[in-house]
Amino acid sequence: MIVVIVKVALVAFLVIGVAVLMIAFVRKSREKGFPTPESSSQFWQIKGAMPPTPKPEWAERDSRADDERPRG
Image 1 (cartoon, rainbow, N blue to C red):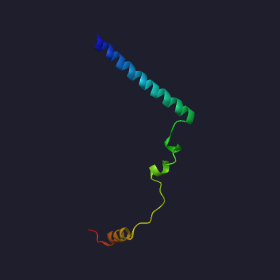
Image 2 (spheres, helix red, strand yellow):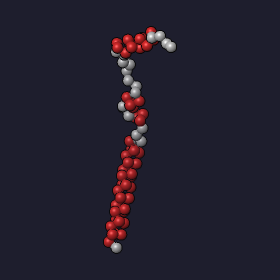
Image 3 (cartoon, rainbow, N blue to C red):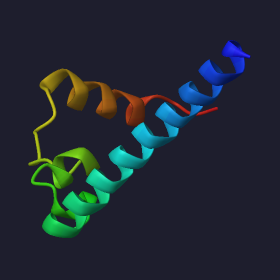
Image 4 (tube, rainbow, N blue to C red):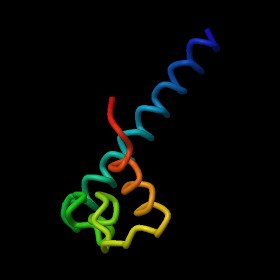
């Protein structure tokens, strides 16, 4: 009998805890606006938009060497 009461209390505690977290999240997201990747200041860095970086000399040299190799 006691075990059943403890199980019910545990489940009720978990349900109430999840409900409180969900309500807090919804209230904050409505207050600030739902967070989207576009609203982040680091959005373009995450997507890979970085300033162009020149290739190192060894990369240029290797790519030209590939073009000069005979095919076949």
